Image 1 (tube, rainbow, N blue to C red):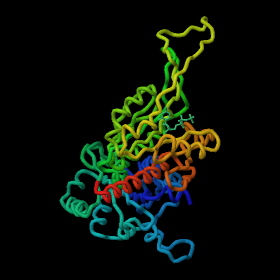
Image 2: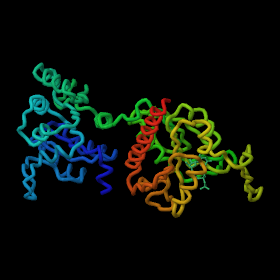
Image 3: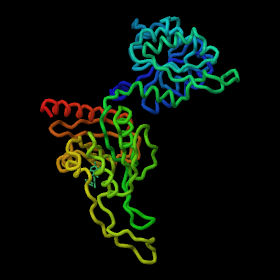
Image 4: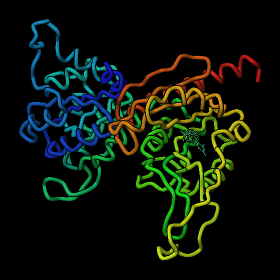
Amino acid sequence: MEPERSERGRRILLGVSGGIAAYKAPELVRRLRERDFAVRCALTPAAAAFVSPLALEVVTGRPVHREEYLAPTGSGAEIHIEAAAWADLLLIAPATAHTLASLALGLADNFLLTTALAFRGPIVVAPALHSAMWENPALQARVAELRARGVSLVGPAVGPLASGEVGMGRMAEVAEIVGAVERTVAPGDLAGRTVLVTAGPTFEPIDPVRFLGNRSSGKMGFAIAAETARRGARTVLVSGPVALATPPGVERVEVETALEMEAAVRERAGACDLVVMAAAVADFRPRERAATKIRKSAGAPRLDLVANPDILSRLPDWAPAALRVGFAAETGNPDDAARQKLAEKDAHLLIANDVSRPEIGFGADDNEVTVHRRGAPPLLLGRRPKSALARDLVDLFAAELRARRGEDLADGR
Ligand code: CTP
């Protein structure tokens, strides 16, 4: 049941009510799915006039809820109850004046509202309506009730309205809505922690135009940093040269060579609770870096290589209190080498993957790993997107950190 596991905590019921902003719903679903949310849609009767249920069915990959009551299987299950139990978060975007007021009053005269009434989890609403309606005290009183009950509002924003006027009432931008959803579902279990993650390759210069490098894309390390930041940790990402955007809330330190990465980690590791070495650090560098471009006419150059420092192995000195996590990029069965590296590098966790498999290796969007731990059996995390894997790995790191804190307390430290 892999897909079920990676959906854990990230199932969204998207309620779409009948306003012009409903045309943005498929785009919103796309952006949510990119972030590994599983999405089901429930349309109010009016919404179907603004957005095609078929389009939503295609982008969610699931049937769209309209006004049905009993499950077609004949099981007697009430679908609104089942849908409310399925979802981890109810997002209503756009939320019209009618839907907002009904939600506040507990009215239940369509599928979405009945489901909302049965739903026990967090609710995020993105109002979209004309400014005159938004500002009406009758509606503002209902919105205040929703806020008081813990419903999160995102928007509305000021901008051009469907009427051609400009005013307060426009639905918040899709990215903003996704951000509000992320903040609402984030467990925040790493608040107060400091995390350092390394990612990407290192480049070891030969001359001003050439270098020794490797195929690491940085995706796995960036996904882990994104996840620790999302869960409240102060996150520093020491990155080799990669073409990836900095995840929200992450402090990025750019380096090029293994020596620069070593210096960046040495400086910061002592203040960290968790250090994750996801970078593919070059083991060797050219002893000399030619000051000018090496010419072909000089014949095939001989590269004299020297060993780079092993950063992970130094962490016990620099960050003795931190949880230390390494990766092992292997070709072929990675597990024996991973066990050896766990011991040799004195890490607490060593995460092994087989980079010779194109569907899960360098640059791929998916990964499959085995986690080796001291004194515990290895744990296989089967193939899944790197962002979903990052979530599962950070769950493990968070559990280890909690266990260590518990031990410290027991020791009276
Ligand atoms: N690592 C490191 N410093 C190095 C080389 C590797 O900190 N100079 C870290 C990596 O970030 C990773 C772990 O050590 O977390 C294992 O890296 P890997 O390249 O798989 O192993 P190596 O020790 O380089 O051994 P080999 O290349 O022989 O497999």
